[in-house]
Each structure stands twice: as structure tokens, then as C-alpha cells.
Length: 257
Image (cartoon, rainbow, N blue to C red; front, top):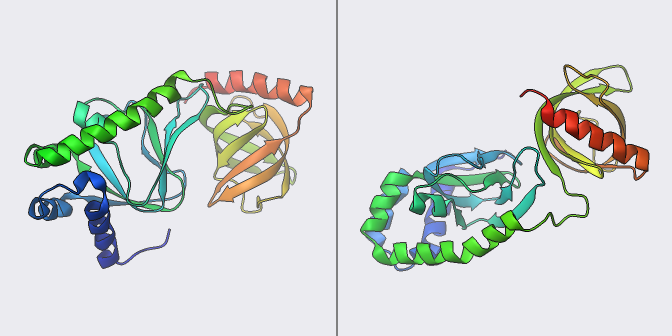
């Protein structure tokens, strides 16, 4: 992704902290001392910030780009809980509660985030009670939508099932291409590490397989979108295709990782 000058990066962090309502009532001097403790992370599209179940060991602030908070568990439908943009913070609930991550977080595009470890941030909150109160109020607002994402059924007509498995693509020209299957449904799939020729709008024909089952799923699809080396595919609508996808899902989810 594009490299930004250090001065610009630090200014983005300062702007995000100064403009966010949570920090509005905070002590400016203490906030300035907190800034050097943030670590800068540069993320490619779909890069994982943290997984569900990871320790809640840090708070994050978005400097540029965007992050999606997801119910993103292998074998279950993917649900988007919230989309966040530059200036937003996330990961606060598990820091405050000293708990493990309830959801996953992924970069939605080329993104810069700033990470601060839980302990120095909690020390800052202990000395800035108005900031702590504002942050706890934010977690209460967000908890309702998080609970809805856990309890509600998939919002898509064809819910995407998280797979997260290395696969092989047998291409029409005889080549075998290594890729990673992110998710799959009867309506389509998302793969990372796709061939360079898979551009938006292009029809693709290949066989998706694993080390133990190279001929698992014949695919005819169209590339709906592409971001970096990640592409979304749309399948056909025939009943036979749907049955093959459903059978393939059963085998993929049972495959060793």
C-alpha cells in the first residue's frame, strides 16, 4: 500500500484523538503523552486486525482507510456488524472488560491503524475519568448492534460461509494455482491470492480442490470485484451447481487446517 510520511501519520493520529468525542473531555497534556505509545500498522485490504477469541489486549484508532467488524467464524455465516472509517476507534469493549474478542476485525481497503496496548491505555483512563465514562457510554451504544449480529439470522439471501482454507485452482490452460478460499456460498465465493488475469467482469472457469481432493468443485463464475489479490466471484443459478457447492462446503469445513 502507499507509504505516507511519518509526519503525516502522526498528524493523522493527533487529529483522530483530538476530534473524537470520547477524548473531548480529556486532559490535553496527558493525551499528548499517550500519543507516542501508539504503534502504527499498515494493512492491505482484508488483512486481519484481530480474530474472534483473541485476547482483548489493545485499543485501535483508524488513521486512514476503513475497518469492518465481523462475525467471522469458520463454518458459520459471515455477518457484518459495523463499518468504521478514519477517526473511529475500536476494540474498546474487550479492553475495558479485560475479555477476549467478540468479533473479528478486517481492513476494508488499504488502511492505517494505530494500536495502543491495554495496560497503558487503562492507566490513562484511570487518570481521566471523563474519558472513561465517555468510552463506556460508547460501548453501551455498540453493544446492541453487536448482540443483534450474534443472534440475528444471516441478512443475505445467500449467506456466505467462512471457510479460511488453502486451496488449489486447476485452470483451463493446465496450470495449477495456489490460492486461499475465504468464504463460499451457493451464490459465489471470495478468494485471495487469485491469478493476475482475474479482473473485474471477467468470466473464469476452473476446478477448486484441496491436497486430498483436487477435483472437488468445478466452477464457472464471473469476477464481481477485485481488491489487490482478493476477488469476489458470482456462480450460476442451476440446482446442480448449488448441490455441488453445498457438498463441497461439507468437505472443505472438515478438511485439516
